[in-house]
Amino acid sequence: MTKKLYIKTYGCQMNVYDTERMVDVMAHEGYAVTEKPDDADLVVLNTCHIREKAAEKVYSDIGRLRVMKQKRIKKDGKETILAVGGCVAQAEGSEIQRRMPVVDMVFGPQTYHRLPEMTRAADEAKSHGVRPRIVDTDLSVSEKFESLSKKTVSPKRTAFLTIQEGCDKFCTYCVVPYTRGGEFSRSFEDVMKDAGKLHEAGVLEVTLLGQNVNAYHGLSGAGEEWSLARLIRHLADTTDFKRIRYTTSHPGDMTDELIAIHGEVEQCMPYLHLPVQSGSDKIVKAMNRHHTIASYMKNIEAIRAVRPDIALSGDFIVGFPGETDADFQKTMKLVRDVNYAQAYSFMYSERPGTPAAGWENQVESHVKSERLAELQQELERQQRAFNDKSVGKVMPVLLERTGKQASHLVGRSPYMQAVYVDVGNEETAAQNFGKLVDMKIISAGPRSLKGEFAN
Ligand code: 5AD
Ligand code: SF4
Image (cartoon, rainbow, N blue to C red):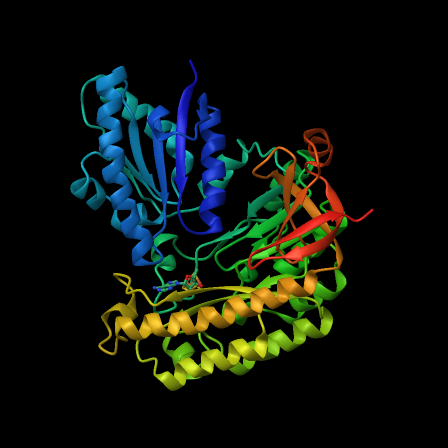
């Protein structure tokens, strides 16, 4: 009998990718995905540790799942294995099971390829009436990719492909170097092997993923080093991918070669997520960001020179320790100067184990909220203006999902905007599903566009 797997994903695209791979490895074990946790034999929480809110949410979800698990065993006599994976698991390890004894398994972002073995061990323990208490938070990466590569099944038109993981930058606010480990670039051949599989499966748009994706420096078997720019060019030349994207980039690794790609490689989409975090040199220095505001602005100018229509996105943190009103106003000025197509913004959150968490010059919570509201108002205005400007234009949209109704399709514009279209009936929707279609944009909302077939 098929077993059921429910996975809840928190946090970033790396976690979305990891979830897809967990689904793949467990499919080989006979597990099918369910949308209902109370139906599942294995429940996995793929967690995020980046900010306190995300981490705390995991504990309240575990509380709810404990009740569900008890009900399931009472009602149907069925056991549920509850697993906590991802970055909270990596950071807190067996502490999670101490705090939440209902958790059977804890594993980090670098060990989920061993999920089948862990699950079998948990089943075995349970069949003997023993609490499993499995913890696997090893941080070495290379074995993981080798193992996953054998089990990839990605039937969609858009896919993520992890090429790099971890980070050596040690921004003073960030947990990533501790939860995901040091910088690791997959070899050129391994990346191309996975790319070939995606290509064969009919994927049209690939997003190259990494915590610091533009620091990519994978080696080939011949010992040659491949940069991200060279890899993108090679993928464009040797595959039929229609669209290539990459995320997340660090301003310090934005090379001239990579910038040039945006003007030269047609498949490289006109969208760049380039977080700057703050507009104040004093703050980016305290954040240990390894770049200045001037160097960031130079990156922006250079990329706009080769690709004037590029949609820019970023991340911002307000209320970092020591941030004064004047520092914050520098962030506001930078945002006005750059003019973003969209962006993410957060209040600084003290993360245990990171340097800035121990500093005495923390900013008061109400100040952080006020600054965030001011910044978000401006970012939302810019996003709306960017979307409004799309109205009347014709652009290719990759129709990758069905919408709320069977006649609705949803896709992305080259600039990452979500585009909705009502194609009239289910049959036309089925015909166009998964296709790259020219759309005329007929209206714009704050976060999405509405389109119709261009001809
Ligand atoms: N507090 C607030 N925001 C954070 N980020 C990372 N760490 C923190 C933190 N401690 C944000 C940064 C990063 C994004 C993924 O999350 O903006 O780019
Ligand atoms: Fe975290 Fe900085 Fe590395 Fe990004 S570059 S993952 S913010 S330490």
